[in-house]
Amino acid sequence: METLYLSLKLIPLVAIALFVLLTLGFVPILIINKVRKRPQRKTFVVWASISGILIVVGLASFVALNQWERIDRIACEKAGGTWGYVFSPGPLLYRSFSCDFPTTDAGKECTDSSQCAIFCAPPNEGSARSAEVVVGTCYGRTNFPNRGCFQFVENGKIRLSEGCAI
Image 1 (cartoon, rainbow, N blue to C red):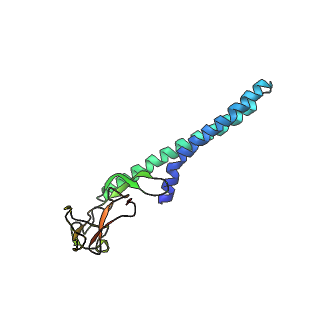
Image 2: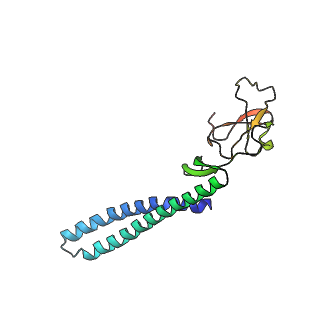
Image 3: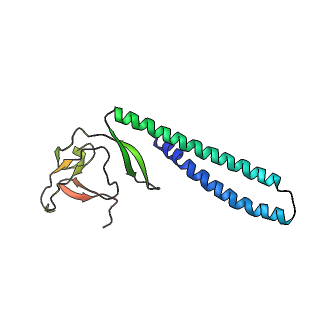
């Protein structure tokens, strides 16, 4: 479902890019035809037809995407979640809407992320030494704000996520 949503989200951008490329490709043809005194009607009709199709497809997918997000938001709020933006990693970094729910183990003490639904967050105090066992608390939401670089507790030690530069 996520792949279909992302595809739908990219269709307007692809349609606009194709429209621009098509326009850049047909303008020289129109100029050459005018210089050679050839009829331009067929060239213009082809360009206008393809451009019209691209514009209709782009607008239709944009409308469908907005309806999809509206339906998802209503379903999320009915289920007790909070609807909002969340950063999503991947080949294309994008911000998308997502439903955020509280977890059942929020605030529970932990020494490893495997003890929590999402992850074990380190204590707020920065005085935890690497030799002692760190006791954190289970993160309380299904979406966390920073999917790039964050700290978590693993085997009683504070670790950095894979997205962090050392």
